[in-house]
Each structure stands twice: as structure tokens, then as C-alpha cells.
Amino acid sequence: MQYFALLISKEQDRPTDDPAATMAAWQNFHAKAGPAIKSGDALAPAAAAAVITGGPDAPVVTDGPFAESAEVACGYYVFEAENLDEALALARDIPLATYGAVEVWPAVHTLEPSRPLTGNDWLALLLEPAATAHTPGTPEWDAVAAKHADLHAAAGDHVLGGAALHDRSTATTVRMRNGEVLITDGPYVEGAEIATGIYLLGASDRDEAVKIASMIPASTVQLRQLAGLSAL
Image (cartoon, rainbow, N blue to C red):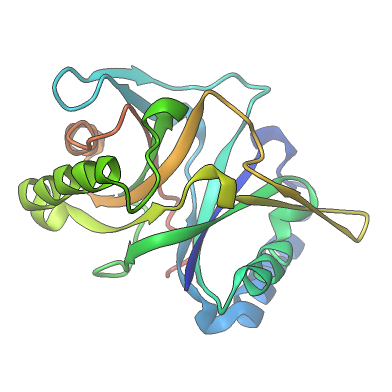
């Protein structure tokens, strides 16, 4: 089964005192996790983000940045794991878990990246209010899934990969503090909107990425450029 891990922290909390040690920690994690990592990357600073609301019929684009003090998504992974316990074991080894948090969501289904990802690619995080975050397998969810099939046909090769997520009751948050694993049920931030899926998008520039993301059938889309660090 595949699991989506969303890495969350305050951008100012990222370690900067010893870049070599920080890079070594991430390299060690990748070596240990090995083939369990199906895709993943850091995200470019939130100042370059775009938030798209209103849906495909009347999209409204708002540029970043987010509030400086806010905890924001700063990376992601898609893991292959036998079960949730195995996925959580992978999540707790992510270096960011020692100062941020890792949300782990089981995926309904995934599209593995069609090519290696680069810093010219984008992650679109799909968000819905609780009232329209439908449970997979219901007629309402199937109706939205049909709209996503239309998106794939329209966007073509710009859709590089993606994942549909199970509902918020299946999410688990992992943190490491002073060597202790802290696990809580639910997303790290209990907000008004719920993550329902992601897309990985290829685009020639930010404007084209925004145009493609505006076609996604979701109430809100957070569009973030990949940092191109992982070479996954």
C-alpha cells in the first residue's frame, strides 16, 4: 500500500548551522528507506507559492507568501509500506520530524511520476471543506473522480503523477522530540480545509503551472514549486 507523507514546519525553524550535517542526515534517511520511497522532494520557499480558490469555473489566484510564523508544507514523500505501522516507522526517521511534523495519509490510489522530477516541476495540494471532502467509494466521491479523469484528458502530459487520499480520520501525525516518538491521530493542523489529494505537474514556468492547477476540480489548490533536491 502507498502512503503520502506531508512534511510541515516553520520555514525559519529549518536547521542552518551545519549544512553538511543536515544534508548527511537526509542522505542517510534516503539510504535507509531505499526502495520504500516512490517519490519525494523538498518544496521551494512558500513566498513563491500560489493559492487557487473558486474551482475551475471561476478560479481566483492569490500569491504567497504565507504568514511568516505559519507552519507550512515544506516537502513530501510517497512511501510503499505493508501497513500503517511501517509507514509511521519511515516517517519518524525523516530528519524534519525532530523539529516539525510529518502527516501520514494512506492513499486511495497513486500515479507514480512518469519521469524523474526536477526543480521546474510543481506540487499541487488539493484541499476541501469538511462538507465537500467526500469519503472514497461513495457516489459523491466517484462523481468528483470523473472530473479528475476529465482533467487528465485536458492536461495531458502536464500531469506527471499524483495521489488521492483517504479521509481525515485515517491521517496520523508523527513528531520526534528528544528521542521520543509522538504520534497523534488526525492531521497536524486541524483547519477548516482537509487535504484530499495531490498532483505533480510539469510546466514551462509559473504562469503555466497556475493555469494547469486552475483546472483541478478542488475548492482550494496550494501550488508549490519543487526544490529539485531529491533526484527521485
